[in-house]
Length: 285
Image 1 (cartoon, rainbow, N blue to C red):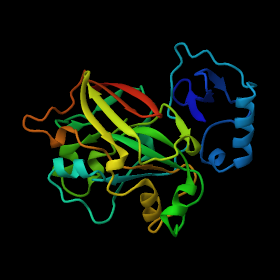
Image 2 (image 1 turned 135 degrees about the vertical axis):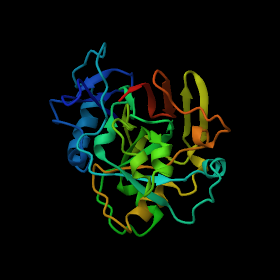
Image 3 (image 1 turned 30 degrees about the horizontal axis):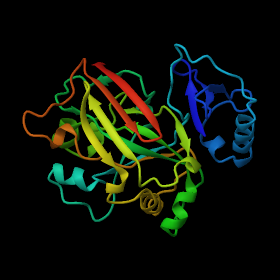
């Protein structure tokens, strides 16, 4: 299923995109799409049955904003340097264990919402990423084989980053990762049954119409299953938590000087195979 939330910011309603691409209203079945729903197999089954039977009311999509597909996100765990080609382009040694950092849940915006270039920024960068959404509590997961059973679904994430704040201003990466609007998510939460192999997804990103990133999750250093297993050894993952699993090569940071960092007025578009497409205009904070 393709689950999404539509409407004005802060007042989104739950919806579903059916097999024919028709937007359907879920508000008669559930109040929202969140961790509680993802952990509720019975209600998810009711939604699936109603969708297959064509019983869900149609929503007029014209002019309707698409918000983040998940409400009340618990935590966003991010994996750095998780593609062989990205580590190479930045001159970094491939990590021997996953590099973990965090983004605050309040960085999340809709897939087509405006992204704000921070005040004083000179190195705002782009990163298309596969987001993993947790649907079952993961605590000390024993094996990679077990790990994917804790995944509710997948989404497109844009891990916008300010590289000067991240690398040159001291401390950890957090200052360059948690600026306002720095995690567009969606358009859909695609349930795991529709993604049989998360290591076979193409990722692309364009800046002002120019293709900048063109990669595949097959190039990940640590697979989705290994990332879920590994992270669960250090913290408990709950339904509604999100893991951003890293970005392929093609970011501004890895390019020759003068690096084409993002500026006010730029337009970024990105997509992941089967998970939908995003488009953001960049404006001043």
